[in-house]
Length: 505
Image (cartoon, rainbow, N blue to C red; front, top):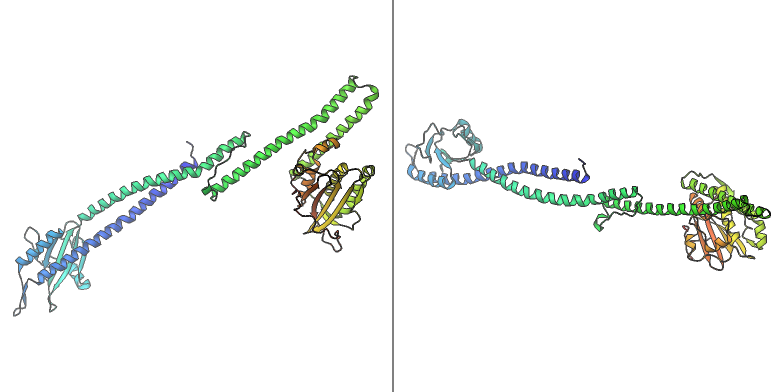
């Protein structure tokens, strides 16, 4: 039989409630018995005091012989009245503990009511006698007994007055109290079980929903969510449910990204492979004339190179995302890296007659991986050269702030629309204009750039005014050395305002 959290928690709560009631009962019954006994003895003591006054009001003192003469008839009538009212036995003994008067139906026998010496010592020590017992063996069962000394005004003691009541009513009292307690306990148990059942079911409901949702996750369905009430968000299960929903959202996004990635990769692979297969088949079956084969072989060669770039980019991405690409930080002049990159595009720059700006600055030292930063600069410069307008300009800027060096690469030209800016860093994304200009790109360059910058703890943003310019600004750790150059007047220019992107494009 499967043991659920619900059944375990409910059993624990039920056990605690039952144990608590049992403990309460074990404490309540002795206190109730003690209270009843105290009240009974107090009541008997009050009646004994009144009965003693009856004795004192019905005696005669023989001064010549110093003896006491009792009016037995009057005293017995008074005793009987009190005895009937409190359902108790009253008897009077002389100073030696021998019974003189009693309220029992049979005549009093002195030997029956001969007090034990210990009882008489109690009077000497405490001034009165209180007991729940058998009065030294006089009674066969337990009795409440209260004894008071009877003293004359001159201080002489003429005897002792006792009043005793059976303790059987204590048993009846405790039975009645136990019945009331058990009835109350049953009602409390029922209410507690109902509340516990409801609270437990409500508490484990998110866990059950998580279990069902997890099963669906295993089947590839990430649409399930755990409902969390307003009053449940702050406790541990509410926090777990919220974290679970966030995880489900992330998994759903990752799954959508994976499917999009697979679809994009399939598309990027299928297009050049289809071209390669078509041209090769055309050459083999003679569809393409011999004099044009070189032309199509060059196309095949370009497509193969494109496939190679795609595979290399995907491998780099895999290494970055798997955490296998380690940074080999060194101190180097980023201006020199940019100059070398610009020289590699010299032919394209001359063809478009571009104006190069901002490279006449001093050294700007950074502490980063030189090869990875070179790849970042190369990709951004390649895009800038590719999309700059003929006769336009490329502008490079540098400034240091907060321990980071900010490098800007700006080109004049058509720029990006507001709709395109949030997407430029997505994998396989190409703007509509770039699809006509960039025949060899695979749409991974800017995504790799952002991944490399993030790996360095930096950030990259893009800003663009359509019809004027596009600028990418990335940051890498700076080297704090004396004389490190800043471009004067531009230290605060690059921030997060101005309507620019935020690096997650």
